[in-house]
Image (cartoon, rainbow, N blue to C red; front, top):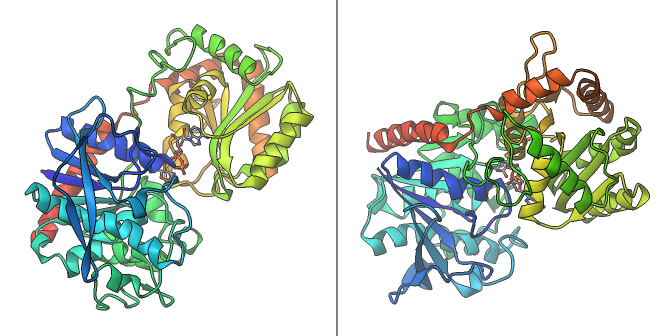
Length: 481
Ligand code: ADP
Ligand code: GLC
């Protein structure tokens, strides 16, 4: 099948969160299955295009009564034969950041509208008609209603909309429709209209041929008011076309046996290299070297989604168990200041690094004993996968993908790959941490058995790719009647 991914992030070129990991890895697994899969990504100023070829033929993306003229760079996803096209438009994508300031502005809508409309235009430009447009969250969501209204040439191309996070739903002024060459036909409650504004996410929920979420549990959760972010009714309405497919991880990048970012390698049979990584992690954060004291790690965007306030509340009680704590992340300045403050007060036992650091993220996954992820909601989550792969037992709130991907410790059966708490509170978190520390200290055989079970899990993208293959087929059949 011919599949075009249209997205705002793609590892290793542009990443703000897990969406970029998914778009950088899933196409490779689909390619290995024999699909003709390609990716369209904006060319942000931060992307080094040296491995790309700039086409001499410009691409005019129809906008309102005129066109947005773009340049196209052609390249490949690393270690694959997946073609990737970068769409260059200085005004839209030439700034320093992927997102920021879009909300409520006409220009914010137009910016990723150019990417979306560009998806159709690229297909024409290549003379290559996809069977499926695979869309990811609001930036490419515009394509679903566009495919049904203004692009009749693509009546046979199905749209599959993957929901990575319902919480990100910027809305735009009504005039955005005209600016993108759309009519007011779908400016209605069962379309793109949302309290007088235009909501592309809502439009994609109504207009995509099929919908997916990044975990099965999240597919159910978004149909409830607690998780639906105002669109639970629409998700419920489309429930028959909504499927949850668990994300995978890129085994080439996240593998303790060959990870280029860590000082020693290890596997489920021989974990001795993990102690070397722990010592390196302690040194990196200036912690006192204490090989027998449990080390808790966090790598996270610093937003309320991730439950960092709850972690902040229990750090002192965590230290009282004789454990230490390190965190890497950036985002909300209030969280950043709080963790930096804790690292100053508890020097030698708490480490905090504010920023984005790929290598340090790998070292935290490899060198910690436990990984904390008490997310309020989590559509899938990738770090709990990475930590399991590195024998770092995750302690999670049982929600969304965390519920689906972590096996709760069962001391009776001597099984489990982590610890779950079933309510989110500081008491629940510290009690779960105390239990984990207790097993670590007094039942090291169980801890080791859990590490081995976690490290042995199948997490590659090939499993998800098989599900998407079935969904694409279903979507194409549905679209073509
Ligand atoms: P989300 O997409 O909601 O942020 P995920 O767990 O799906 O959550 O994905 C987050 C991804 O971003 C992971 O690959 C994680 O390692 C990475 N990440 C988050 N913050 C940082 C950071 N400060 N430095 C390096 N990597 C980070
Ligand atoms: C979103 C979600 C995260 C998910 C990622 C990739 O950023 O917050 O849970 O893992 O998308 O699908």
